[in-house]
Picture 1: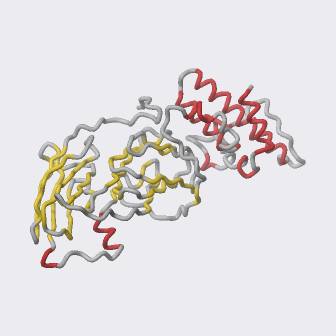
Picture 2 (picture 1 turned 90 degrees about the vertical axis):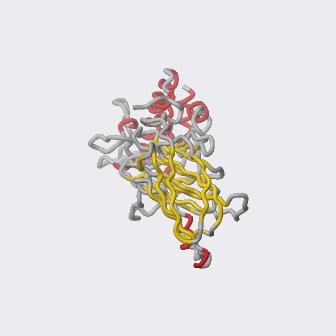
Picture 3 (picture 1 turned 45 degrees about the horizontal axis):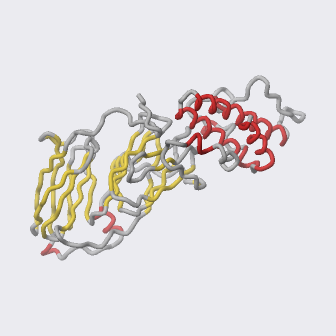
Length: 350
Protein backbone atom coordinates (compact mmCIF):
# COMPACT_ATOMS: atom_id res chain seq x y z
CA UNK A 1 0.00 0.00 0.00
CA UNK A 2 2.90 2.35 0.63
CA UNK A 3 3.94 1.99 -3.03
CA UNK A 4 0.45 2.96 -4.18
CA UNK A 5 0.26 5.92 -1.83
CA UNK A 6 3.49 7.36 -3.20
CA UNK A 7 2.33 6.83 -6.78
CA UNK A 8 -0.97 8.56 -6.09
CA UNK A 9 0.89 11.59 -4.75
CA UNK A 10 2.54 11.87 -8.16
CA UNK A 11 -0.71 13.07 -9.69
CA UNK A 12 -0.24 16.35 -7.89
CA UNK A 13 3.53 16.58 -7.61
CA UNK A 14 5.01 15.37 -10.94
CA UNK A 15 5.03 17.60 -14.05
CA UNK A 16 2.89 16.33 -16.91
CA UNK A 17 5.87 16.25 -19.27
CA UNK A 18 7.66 13.88 -16.92
CA UNK A 19 4.68 11.59 -16.58
CA UNK A 20 4.07 11.28 -20.33
CA UNK A 21 7.70 10.66 -21.20
CA UNK A 22 7.97 6.90 -21.64
CA UNK A 23 4.69 5.44 -22.77
CA UNK A 24 3.93 5.44 -26.46
CA UNK A 25 7.05 5.63 -28.62
CA UNK A 26 8.88 2.57 -29.99
CA UNK A 27 12.25 3.90 -28.89
CA UNK A 28 11.16 3.63 -25.27
CA UNK A 29 10.81 -0.15 -25.18
CA UNK A 30 13.17 -2.25 -23.08
CA UNK A 31 13.32 -5.25 -25.42
CA UNK A 32 10.08 -5.79 -27.38
CA UNK A 33 6.83 -3.89 -27.73
CA UNK A 34 3.25 -4.82 -28.41
CA UNK A 35 1.30 -3.63 -31.45
CA UNK A 36 0.62 -0.28 -29.75
CA UNK A 37 4.35 0.13 -29.04
CA UNK A 38 3.77 0.44 -25.30
CA UNK A 39 6.54 -1.14 -23.21
CA UNK A 40 5.32 -4.56 -22.08
CA UNK A 41 6.29 -3.98 -18.46
CA UNK A 42 4.20 -0.83 -18.35
CA UNK A 43 1.06 -2.10 -20.09
CA UNK A 44 -2.07 -1.46 -17.97
CA UNK A 45 -4.10 -4.45 -16.85
CA UNK A 46 -7.68 -5.29 -17.84
CA UNK A 47 -9.06 -3.18 -14.98
CA UNK A 48 -7.60 0.05 -16.34
CA UNK A 49 -10.42 2.25 -17.66
CA UNK A 50 -9.03 5.73 -18.28
CA UNK A 51 -11.44 8.59 -18.77
CA UNK A 52 -11.80 9.37 -22.48
CA UNK A 53 -13.01 12.39 -24.37
CA UNK A 54 -15.31 12.05 -27.36
CA UNK A 55 -13.37 10.57 -30.24
CA UNK A 56 -11.42 8.21 -28.00
CA UNK A 57 -8.73 10.66 -26.85
CA UNK A 58 -7.72 10.59 -23.19
CA UNK A 59 -8.47 13.60 -21.07
CA UNK A 60 -5.64 15.14 -19.05
CA UNK A 61 -6.94 13.36 -15.98
CA UNK A 62 -7.20 10.12 -17.93
CA UNK A 63 -3.58 10.35 -19.07
CA UNK A 64 -2.43 10.94 -15.51
CA UNK A 65 -4.50 8.06 -14.24
CA UNK A 66 -3.11 5.71 -16.90
CA UNK A 67 0.48 6.58 -16.02
CA UNK A 68 -0.18 6.14 -12.34
CA UNK A 69 -1.76 2.74 -12.90
CA UNK A 70 1.21 1.66 -15.03
CA UNK A 71 3.66 2.87 -12.41
CA UNK A 72 1.71 1.21 -9.60
CA UNK A 73 1.74 -2.10 -11.46
CA UNK A 74 5.51 -1.84 -11.99
CA UNK A 75 6.10 -0.99 -8.34
CA UNK A 76 4.05 -3.96 -7.15
CA UNK A 77 6.08 -6.26 -9.42
CA UNK A 78 9.32 -4.61 -8.29
CA UNK A 79 8.39 -5.19 -4.66
CA UNK A 80 7.61 -8.84 -5.34
CA UNK A 81 10.91 -9.34 -7.21
CA UNK A 82 12.82 -7.74 -4.34
CA UNK A 83 11.07 -9.96 -1.82
CA UNK A 84 12.05 -12.99 -3.93
CA UNK A 85 15.70 -11.91 -3.86
CA UNK A 86 15.86 -10.90 -7.53
CA UNK A 87 17.54 -7.51 -7.05
CA UNK A 88 18.34 -7.00 -10.71
CA UNK A 89 14.78 -7.49 -11.93
CA UNK A 90 13.44 -5.39 -9.07
CA UNK A 91 15.78 -2.56 -10.02
CA UNK A 92 14.73 -2.69 -13.68
CA UNK A 93 11.03 -2.59 -12.82
CA UNK A 94 11.51 0.21 -10.33
CA UNK A 95 13.57 2.20 -12.86
CA UNK A 96 10.73 1.79 -15.38
CA UNK A 97 8.32 3.31 -12.88
CA UNK A 98 10.75 6.19 -12.32
CA UNK A 99 10.72 6.93 -16.04
CA UNK A 100 6.93 7.03 -16.10
CA UNK A 101 6.30 9.45 -13.25
CA UNK A 102 9.68 10.92 -12.34
CA UNK A 103 12.52 9.74 -10.11
CA UNK A 104 11.93 12.58 -7.66
CA UNK A 105 8.47 11.23 -6.86
CA UNK A 106 9.79 7.79 -5.98
CA UNK A 107 12.98 8.98 -4.27
CA UNK A 108 11.87 7.73 -0.80
CA UNK A 109 11.72 4.18 -2.18
CA UNK A 110 14.88 4.30 -4.32
CA UNK A 111 17.46 3.22 -1.70
CA UNK A 112 15.92 -0.22 -1.13
CA UNK A 113 15.94 -0.97 -4.86
CA UNK A 114 19.41 0.43 -5.64
CA UNK A 115 21.18 -0.87 -2.53
CA UNK A 116 24.14 -3.05 -3.50
CA UNK A 117 24.57 -1.43 -6.93
CA UNK A 118 27.24 1.17 -7.84
CA UNK A 119 26.48 4.82 -6.99
CA UNK A 120 23.56 6.03 -9.09
CA UNK A 121 24.09 9.08 -11.29
CA UNK A 122 20.87 11.07 -11.15
CA UNK A 123 21.83 14.20 -13.07
CA UNK A 124 19.29 15.11 -15.77
CA UNK A 125 19.92 13.59 -19.17
CA UNK A 126 21.00 15.86 -22.01
CA UNK A 127 19.77 15.78 -25.59
CA UNK A 128 22.20 14.64 -28.28
CA UNK A 129 22.45 14.82 -32.05
CA UNK A 130 21.57 11.32 -33.25
CA UNK A 131 23.04 12.01 -36.70
CA UNK A 132 26.64 11.98 -35.42
CA UNK A 133 28.80 9.38 -37.15
CA UNK A 134 30.07 6.36 -35.25
CA UNK A 135 33.66 6.23 -33.96
CA UNK A 136 36.36 3.60 -34.54
CA UNK A 137 36.28 0.55 -32.25
CA UNK A 138 39.43 1.69 -30.43
CA UNK A 139 40.29 5.31 -29.65
CA UNK A 140 43.02 7.01 -27.63
CA UNK A 141 46.34 8.66 -28.43
CA UNK A 142 48.27 11.33 -26.55
CA UNK A 143 50.02 12.34 -29.76
CA UNK A 144 46.71 12.79 -31.58
CA UNK A 145 45.56 15.05 -28.76
CA UNK A 146 48.82 17.01 -28.90
CA UNK A 147 48.47 17.50 -32.64
CA UNK A 148 44.88 18.67 -32.22
CA UNK A 149 46.02 21.09 -29.49
CA UNK A 150 48.99 22.22 -31.67
CA UNK A 151 51.58 21.14 -29.09
CA UNK A 152 55.01 21.37 -30.81
CA UNK A 153 57.01 18.10 -31.04
CA UNK A 154 60.63 17.82 -29.88
CA UNK A 155 63.25 19.17 -32.34
CA UNK A 156 63.68 16.81 -35.31
CA UNK A 157 67.26 15.95 -34.43
CA UNK A 158 66.10 14.79 -31.01
CA UNK A 159 62.93 12.93 -31.92
CA UNK A 160 62.62 9.20 -31.34
CA UNK A 161 59.93 6.85 -32.59
CA UNK A 162 58.85 3.58 -30.99
CA UNK A 163 57.15 0.80 -32.93
CA UNK A 164 56.04 -2.40 -31.27
CA UNK A 165 53.59 -5.22 -30.76
CA UNK A 166 51.71 -6.36 -27.69
CA UNK A 167 51.78 -10.17 -27.56
CA UNK A 168 50.17 -12.98 -25.58
CA UNK A 169 52.16 -16.22 -25.28
CA UNK A 170 54.57 -14.98 -27.93
CA UNK A 171 51.82 -14.28 -30.46
CA UNK A 172 50.28 -10.97 -31.47
CA UNK A 173 46.84 -10.10 -30.19
CA UNK A 174 44.07 -11.29 -32.48
CA UNK A 175 40.65 -9.68 -32.36
CA UNK A 176 41.47 -7.71 -29.21
CA UNK A 177 42.82 -4.30 -28.33
CA UNK A 178 45.51 -3.15 -25.95
CA UNK A 179 47.08 -0.01 -24.55
CA UNK A 180 50.69 1.12 -24.13
CA UNK A 181 51.84 4.01 -21.93
CA UNK A 182 55.24 5.63 -21.41
CA UNK A 183 56.46 7.48 -18.32
CA UNK A 184 59.93 9.12 -18.09
CA UNK A 185 62.02 7.18 -15.56
CA UNK A 186 62.86 9.26 -12.50
CA UNK A 187 61.39 12.33 -14.09
CA UNK A 188 58.37 14.50 -13.58
CA UNK A 189 55.89 15.57 -16.18
CA UNK A 190 53.05 17.98 -16.49
CA UNK A 191 49.66 16.27 -16.09
CA UNK A 192 47.69 16.11 -19.28
CA UNK A 193 44.68 18.42 -19.48
CA UNK A 194 41.35 16.61 -18.97
CA UNK A 195 39.22 16.30 -22.08
CA UNK A 196 35.59 15.57 -22.94
CA UNK A 197 34.94 12.28 -24.75
CA UNK A 198 31.99 10.28 -26.03
CA UNK A 199 31.36 6.55 -25.67
CA UNK A 200 28.10 5.80 -27.45
CA UNK A 201 25.68 2.90 -27.29
CA UNK A 202 25.05 1.80 -30.87
CA UNK A 203 23.57 -1.44 -32.17
CA UNK A 204 23.77 -2.92 -28.66
CA UNK A 205 27.52 -2.26 -28.52
CA UNK A 206 29.79 0.30 -26.91
CA UNK A 207 31.28 2.62 -29.50
CA UNK A 208 34.27 2.77 -29.14
CA UNK A 209 34.81 -0.65 -27.59
CA UNK A 210 38.09 0.52 -26.00
CA UNK A 211 38.92 4.13 -25.17
CA UNK A 212 41.93 5.67 -23.42
CA UNK A 213 41.48 8.99 -21.60
CA UNK A 214 43.48 11.22 -19.26
CA UNK A 215 42.74 11.38 -15.54
CA UNK A 216 40.03 13.93 -14.82
CA UNK A 217 38.37 13.57 -18.23
CA UNK A 218 34.61 13.44 -18.63
CA UNK A 219 32.85 10.87 -20.81
CA UNK A 220 29.32 11.22 -22.17
CA UNK A 221 27.38 8.00 -22.78
CA UNK A 222 24.71 8.76 -25.41
CA UNK A 223 22.08 6.23 -26.41
CA UNK A 224 21.73 5.95 -30.21
CA UNK A 225 19.59 2.78 -30.08
CA UNK A 226 15.81 2.51 -30.13
CA UNK A 227 15.88 0.55 -26.88
CA UNK A 228 16.92 1.40 -23.35
CA UNK A 229 20.43 0.79 -22.00
CA UNK A 230 21.81 0.93 -18.46
CA UNK A 231 25.57 1.65 -18.54
CA UNK A 232 27.42 0.80 -15.33
CA UNK A 233 30.78 -0.20 -13.88
CA UNK A 234 31.59 -1.91 -10.61
CA UNK A 235 35.30 -1.00 -10.81
CA UNK A 236 36.45 0.45 -7.48
CA UNK A 237 38.41 3.02 -9.49
CA UNK A 238 35.26 4.39 -11.12
CA UNK A 239 32.05 2.66 -9.98
CA UNK A 240 28.87 4.26 -11.32
CA UNK A 241 25.36 3.47 -12.53
CA UNK A 242 23.81 5.75 -15.17
CA UNK A 243 20.32 4.24 -14.93
CA UNK A 244 18.15 3.87 -18.02
CA UNK A 245 17.31 6.55 -20.54
CA UNK A 246 15.89 6.68 -24.02
CA UNK A 247 17.38 7.22 -27.46
CA UNK A 248 18.71 10.69 -28.15
CA UNK A 249 19.79 11.27 -24.54
CA UNK A 250 23.03 10.98 -22.57
CA UNK A 251 24.48 11.13 -19.09
CA UNK A 252 28.10 11.90 -18.17
CA UNK A 253 30.68 10.73 -15.65
CA UNK A 254 34.08 12.17 -14.73
CA UNK A 255 36.91 9.70 -14.09
CA UNK A 256 39.27 10.94 -11.38
CA UNK A 257 41.45 7.86 -10.77
CA UNK A 258 43.92 6.04 -13.00
CA UNK A 259 43.01 2.47 -13.91
CA UNK A 260 41.04 0.11 -16.10
CA UNK A 261 37.26 0.56 -16.04
CA UNK A 262 35.24 -2.32 -17.45
CA UNK A 263 31.82 -1.21 -18.67
CA UNK A 264 28.65 -3.21 -19.01
CA UNK A 265 24.96 -2.74 -19.78
CA UNK A 266 22.68 -4.06 -17.08
CA UNK A 267 19.98 -4.83 -19.66
CA UNK A 268 22.19 -6.57 -22.25
CA UNK A 269 24.73 -9.07 -20.92
CA UNK A 270 26.57 -9.26 -24.25
CA UNK A 271 27.60 -5.59 -24.13
CA UNK A 272 31.05 -4.78 -22.78
CA UNK A 273 33.56 -1.99 -23.18
CA UNK A 274 36.70 -0.59 -21.58
CA UNK A 275 37.82 2.84 -20.47
CA UNK A 276 41.49 3.07 -19.56
CA UNK A 277 42.15 6.14 -17.45
CA UNK A 278 45.78 7.21 -17.84
CA UNK A 279 48.08 9.56 -15.90
CA UNK A 280 51.13 8.93 -18.13
CA UNK A 281 52.16 11.72 -20.52
CA UNK A 282 52.29 9.36 -23.54
CA UNK A 283 49.79 6.64 -24.43
CA UNK A 284 48.28 4.92 -27.44
CA UNK A 285 45.67 2.23 -28.08
CA UNK A 286 46.82 -0.69 -30.23
CA UNK A 287 45.05 -2.09 -33.25
CA UNK A 288 43.38 -5.54 -33.20
CA UNK A 289 46.74 -7.26 -33.80
CA UNK A 290 48.48 -5.45 -30.96
CA UNK A 291 50.50 -3.07 -33.15
CA UNK A 292 51.31 0.41 -31.87
CA UNK A 293 53.60 3.35 -32.64
CA UNK A 294 54.76 6.56 -30.97
CA UNK A 295 55.97 9.18 -33.45
CA UNK A 296 57.33 12.04 -31.36
CA UNK A 297 59.23 10.96 -28.25
CA UNK A 298 62.08 12.75 -26.53
CA UNK A 299 65.07 10.40 -26.17
CA UNK A 300 65.62 8.95 -22.71
CA UNK A 301 64.65 6.10 -20.37
CA UNK A 302 60.98 5.26 -19.91
CA UNK A 303 58.79 2.95 -17.91
CA UNK A 304 56.58 1.19 -20.45
CA UNK A 305 53.27 -0.27 -19.28
CA UNK A 306 51.10 -2.49 -21.47
CA UNK A 307 47.64 -3.99 -21.10
CA UNK A 308 45.16 -5.89 -23.26
CA UNK A 309 41.46 -6.46 -22.83
CA UNK A 310 42.32 -10.10 -22.15
CA UNK A 311 44.52 -9.08 -19.19
CA UNK A 312 43.61 -8.33 -15.60
CA UNK A 313 46.23 -5.64 -15.12
CA UNK A 314 49.13 -3.99 -16.96
CA UNK A 315 52.71 -5.26 -17.05
CA UNK A 316 55.72 -2.91 -16.84
CA UNK A 317 59.20 -2.91 -18.36
CA UNK A 318 61.99 -0.41 -18.97
CA UNK A 319 62.78 0.89 -22.45
CA UNK A 320 65.39 3.32 -23.75
CA UNK A 321 64.41 5.63 -26.58
CA UNK A 322 67.25 6.77 -28.84
CA UNK A 323 66.99 9.41 -31.56
CA UNK A 324 65.48 7.81 -34.66
CA UNK A 325 63.65 4.49 -34.89
CA UNK A 326 63.20 2.13 -31.94
CA UNK A 327 61.32 -1.16 -31.67
CA UNK A 328 60.02 -3.27 -28.80
CA UNK A 329 57.99 -6.43 -28.21
CA UNK A 330 55.79 -6.56 -25.13
CA UNK A 331 54.24 -9.66 -23.54
CA UNK A 332 51.06 -9.49 -21.43
CA UNK A 333 49.06 -12.17 -19.62
CA UNK A 334 45.77 -13.63 -20.81
CA UNK A 335 44.32 -13.87 -17.29
CA UNK A 336 41.15 -11.77 -17.53
CA UNK A 337 37.88 -13.61 -16.79
CA UNK A 338 35.93 -14.69 -19.87
CA UNK A 339 32.21 -14.54 -20.48
CA UNK A 340 29.67 -11.82 -19.63
CA UNK A 341 30.51 -9.58 -16.71
CA UNK A 342 28.21 -9.86 -13.66
CA UNK A 343 25.21 -7.54 -13.39
CA UNK A 344 25.53 -4.37 -11.35
CA UNK A 345 24.59 -6.25 -8.16
CA UNK A 346 27.30 -8.86 -8.77
CA UNK A 347 24.90 -11.52 -10.04
CA UNK A 348 26.05 -13.99 -12.69
CA UNK A 349 24.70 -13.60 -16.23
CA UNK A 350 24.87 -15.69 -19.38
